[in-house]
Image (cartoon, rainbow, N blue to C red; front, top):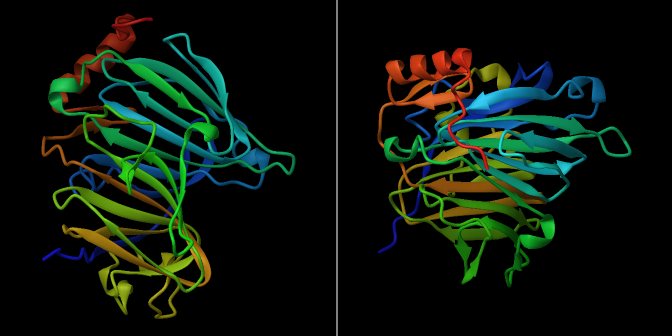
Length: 303
């Protein structure tokens, strides 16, 4: 009999500064690498004020990870040491595998109202792939299939497969699922998941209950001040739910519906040595990476 996933932890994204002074909110990252394995962090950079994001993320290195950038409003200009240049527009995805090393920059731009919305997810690479050749995948909104279920639930399938429809991102080591799910008001969405995968949901619009839980706040581990203190079953914008192991998850949208990212992947179960934009398995490997940055030998591959 299929086993339902339950709520394991609840998080609320927290304000932080990154890059050259970009205001964003971090849903998780740095202190929970094993809890979310194979994922490392999720940043929500939805901003209404250009002064909060215009300085962007100038040239910086990555090694040992993949970064996944999903733009919702405005755009992000991108450039990297492989020679890729371009602009990521609403609905587009940038899936970048840093591997042995890449240097890139990301510069957000506002829409006609000055807004820039997006999310960036970091996924770890296993030891055997840490030093693989880097690669860049830029996917336009038109390349991402939209599936509408009988109950009106809409799913943009970036990675993974739903009812036989596959997303355009494939051949990723952690076998990820990355879905943008919109659930109509007072509608239930049930979705199968590989039982061994780490799975989480991040609410970006509306509110929902998860796993038929009446009091998700009993699972919170972040500071209580970051939560709506009214005890209610619904979790709203900027809330993240990490699920226990199981075969499926259940989402019930509130009166205004809900939109959420549903993300899953195969755990790596390896040591994590992490400093800034570089994630390796040992401190010695980190020291080597930063020494190579100083020596000018960090980049191992150029297209």
